[in-house]
Image (cartoon, rainbow, N blue to C red):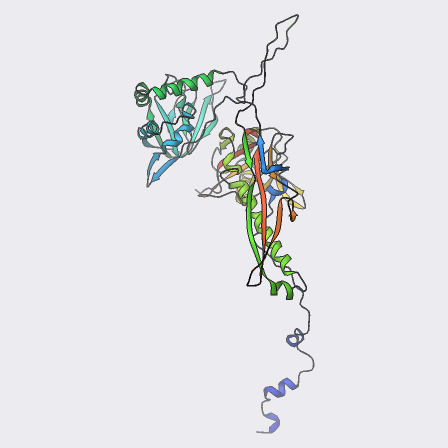
Length: 469
């Protein structure tokens, strides 16, 4: 074989290269870098749109007019398999038992409830019929129905998990003023009034409790349950004018600023030697603050003490009519308060609402807010919030009025802190340990307050999808 036909060695191929390779050139080039990216950052609309009120001293007291109306809370259950049992202490959520502290009697009362199933379409109560039992909805949905002016049947409300009906008849004989029809299958617990009456006949504390409830119910109140202010209008001449005064709650609620904290640690060698082209400590701090703000918004929604989901008044909670959020549901939620500033919903709930609108041939408007495109319903923006929990494919939608001037929902913080990085968020140097690690204490102080109950409403049991038939 001729020598020129022999295969070339790798060295010969390398020698034939006519210019510097890109791999070698990168050793001399300055790489263009991004700052560290973080997937956990969300839009945080609640933090952005909630008006923030300065709280000096770390405590915010909400003074209100005295309210005589007793709210209707929800009863809780203990579940073992298919069996439901009433948690006795939660029976005090029934208005007639509000404040009753006889644990033994409550336990005995809870033990007298019997469980039974109901099916979709089943009539649980009829208008005008005697009330014979107190019903607790363990699981499922029940429509509250009434008869309209011209004899038609209308749906005027609904009941779901933990709600109760018929308890108005505790200690007295009465008839149903509304009907109840199951919209889904489910489970309820029933207490016959005869069993309740037997317990009432032999319990003096229970009779005292019901008498006190009757006295509270007889007081004159306005439609919001506040003590009536006596006024005169439309009179002529020298009529005797009523005397009055405005009474206040004796024990108004106080909100303490909550805290979210962490200790950021940076090795001194990293802080000294690796700060070009970007400051390592600054980037560590930036990402830590982002995570802290995400947690802050989560707490504002979900915290059991001051979170919006836990502190909305029960009379401001409604259920969807059919499952997914429909325009009818959003209209009802909107009509429960004046000057609603915005809705807050999980992105999946917004998508479900969009599907329901498409089915009906209506389309939510949209607009640009702070450079972002958002949906709106009846001119009220619907902001996405992934902090609203999704449980068993159901979630909630919040609607709120905001600001102190409108007696709405306000965020609470305290500015002017030492070493403050942002309002109510500070970073304090904690020192360097014997391993040359620098520590910084990063702290955010915050809370939220609902000034009057109707400032916040919640659409509950919002189903995110429907199985296809």
